[in-house]
Image 1 (cartoon, rainbow, N blue to C red):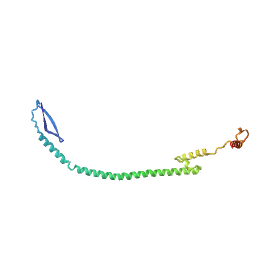
Image 2 (image 1 turned 135 degrees about the vertical axis):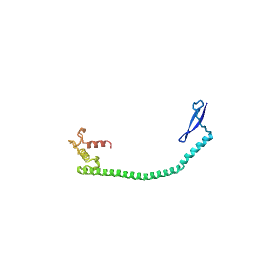
Image 3 (image 1 turned 180 degrees about the vertical axis):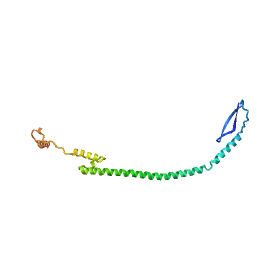
Image 4 (image 1 turned 120 degrees about the horizontal axis):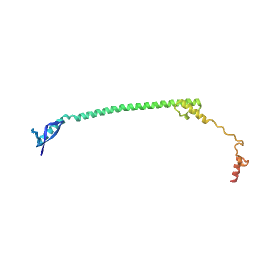
Amino acid sequence: MSTRTLNADLLIGGIFMETVNQENATNNEEVKTFTQEELNKVVEDRLARERAKYLDYEDLKAKAQKYDEAEEASKTELQKATEKAQALEVELEGLKKANELRQIREEVARATNVPANLLTADTKEACEAQAKEILAFAKPQSYPKVKDGGEVSTTGGKSTSKLFSEWMEQYK
């Protein structure tokens, strides 16, 4: 049969370690046993000492929270200003690029007589090549010459206008 005893000198970090002694142990050292009331008193004293260490914990926690909030608020203002500056820089770069493209396209349009709104390339060389292609496409085509002035020859020698007037006469 075993009895549970608490060895007081095994107090580690506020936690008591229990040791179990058995009756048939060869070690005849005297082990002090505690009653429940004595154990409760020891634990209560230890808890009181620990609580005393952290009495101002709530005050420190509140101060730290206020500091963090103030730091976050100032950080937020700084971040807002930084983000706004970055957005404005991006917008400015976009406007500069758009203006540069517009100038290139207008210059090529004046040189080639191609409307600037038809040019979509990003570089001067590409705009010039595009303008040449547009001019080649827009070049007037020559149409085949028709001997009879565009009249169909399978009408039995009658002109289209004569055939149409005959057709209209039928439905009057």
